[in-house]
Image (cartoon, rainbow, N blue to C red; front, top):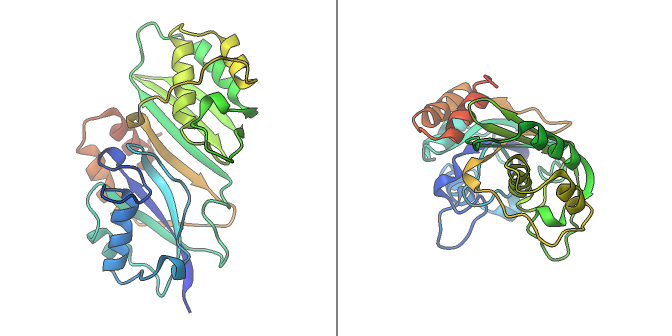
Length: 265
């Protein structure tokens, strides 16, 4: 009888049209499902009860995407990774409860956004604005609206740090579409003096005349996902393989992802 397993998947989103399959364009999910089929682990998505934790947009990367499916045997991570390109990797696997749903059962998702620090950026004001976003609010001006979906959401953590670049961290049980990138844009506007804290307050109350644009996707990655009853065992060979790929790139996001994956930050 098949058992339910969770796979932790990392990927560089630069060359893909998002995670979710789309006809005629490369997607991370399309690459992953082909690898699972080529390994003989997957024949029918319905029969395997295939589910994913996050539907990342075009250009967004991840270190902790979680995929769940029923498999006839314990997944051989090394074998799967042999079928994957260098920019996609299964980093670990773990047995899951029979009814485990990686999207529904999330306790918290942690997204990180990195970018160069604009000249004259007011870090303290940006931090104050980030604090306003914590809690339950109507984020209608901080997301791409989807028909029938509420724009009320709860943010558990929002913070901004500066080292040799800006780092934005957001934690929540779930995020609206483009919510993280639009919150980043709002904080960048505060820090560069284009808007004040009162504008952010009014936006969270639904009392402004415009939505925030999404910041570019090339700074964003899914850093972590937490669950109450799931343990995924990392495969160190797979981790090292993906680290080698990240360290071979020269962009800021890849550097920070490598630091997070190796436990530096």
